[in-house]
Length: 69
Image 1: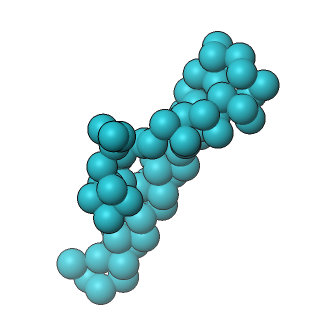
Image 2: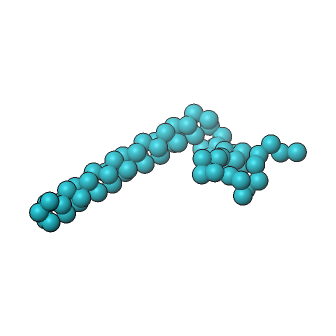
Image 3: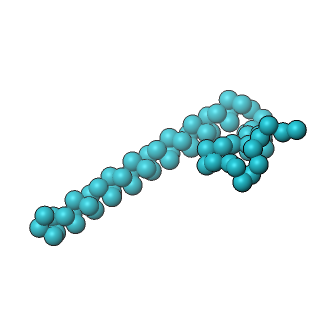
């Protein structure tokens, strides 16, 4: 019997063993390369989110200024 929750019970942060195996397979089974790839991906997403927040903030300030607020 599997201890993993059914697919309907997964939250966005749950990762299945199959997904872990897939990540390892993408790096030819090299755990260090897999961790490196995941960390690079995380850093990329964090940079993208920072840029989106900065752009949204600038747009908000510009819009408020244009309205005379």
